[in-house]
Image (cartoon, rainbow, N blue to C red; front, side):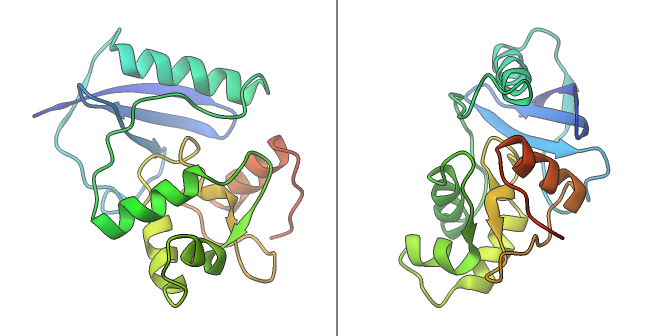
Length: 163
């Protein structure tokens, strides 16, 4: 099965939106490591309804007209990863959580490192807000789009954090 893709120009750089027939599969960063999110072949598909819906909602998010997303998601990962990604969706706009807090939320309090690894493999950045996960000391930590992009997204949501 091939996936539909389209480019989206955002304030944090060019993003590639990827969708299946059932949902949004990925939002890839311009310099994303191809091993971070492994996907089947991509085809540019103008007018794909899920990609158009995602672009519209991202535009509204960046314009501060949207605080949450209402898109069908097609997660592709392990059960553990999917559990972490579901927990990320529960982090409210403008709020942050530590890796330990996410581990606690999924009922695996000793799995902070595994949560960090799953967070780093989140294929649907921004929509599934992995940028809202920070270090236990409150500092910004790794992000596929880079720490400047992470800081930008948090500032957009009203949070100022140092990195």
